[in-house]
Length: 192
Image 1 (tube, rainbow, N blue to C red):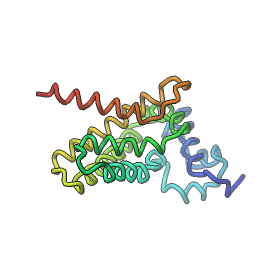
Image 2: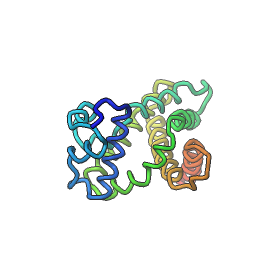
Image 3: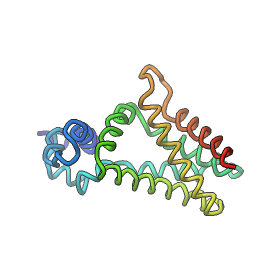
């Protein structure tokens, strides 16, 4: 077993998602995940506190990228334009591995109440990061909160569309996330 092979955290996430999909979240053990990833159980625990934490792997990085994009948006950007800048920044970090993992991850989450709860907490964390970045730009809190929530919805919808799109499609995640944000913005106009 290769103990110090690079990419252990990513291999653990992929192994876990595959096992969750194959045999269910409850039936999957940390030992099985570690074995599938080709690492020791202690390596698993160096990266993750428990198997639930696999779902939020990368959340801190994603939150930071979203917030950085918002922070660096032009000073005259509207709240949703700043959110779009955050979505573009976060999307730039998503590559083919993220795209391939999407459908399997959605299936694993759909099959487990515990993973659905963890996914909901992840969404709350992403929205909070965007809200805080918008408030720091001087956006009033209710507006910042709404824009942050729309940003999370756009990211999730865009990611789902991107991960299910034709693999010959060379577009990255950004166009999908930005189109989802535009759709959501248009939908808010119909709220009255």
